[in-house]
Length: 175
Image (tube, rainbow, N blue to C red; front, side, top):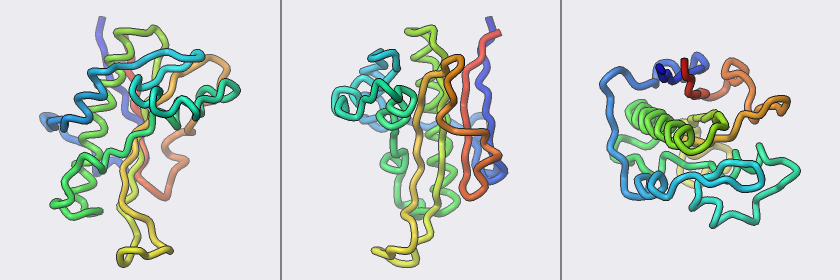
């Protein structure tokens, strides 16, 4: 069996994607999140520790939305601001860490559950002109995942539909 990770991204994300050989070490909170694993609840798959803390967000009528909300992770919380918050170096570090972590999540889920997952990574390099600028956005990089179910619309559309920010979908395919 051959395992492949498929990255579908829009034009804004492509220059930020990690290159072969890039490796990122996980800070303790990310290692802990992986160690605690993924659990199944109401037909959905969730980071076990996120589900324990956010069970009130679980909506049986919209399990895909619940997965995407509860499994949301702000990657920027784990990247050094010394790189220059919102800079290209910061953005590449965020995306690289998110892609590597996303692959590990897909692998962990595949080992425990037959249900395939999709990981989405979005990046906003920020548009705030000064701290507290209510008109601008704060730099952020978000990873979230959800299960793929036949006949159920996916949480996000095709990456090319997102033209305002870097966006990618990551999947694990076995052949």
